[in-house]
Image (cartoon, rainbow, N blue to C red):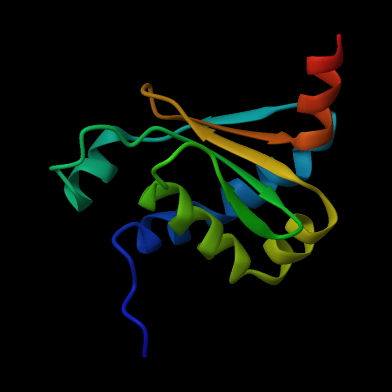
Length: 117
């Protein structure tokens, strides 16, 4: 059996919230504030938990040279959910976590429309 990654349990806790954000993102980008202490308990050596990751056709597209374990664990937890997998196969998403621990979920078609303006 494969060992769980550090952030899997945390993302499992937030999976219902993230799935709701994904569904609600049809109305525009959604955000939710997470708690810094929950991340620091898991890995206090990490300098930054911030990430930006795109999910296209159900697969993570890594932004930048270094893939964030935090981001990859989020995508993996969502892939383990039937609803999450269906949503990610139907719609391309962008997930970001900033330094203030605000998780943003945006549909990629919304991002592209904003860039065209």
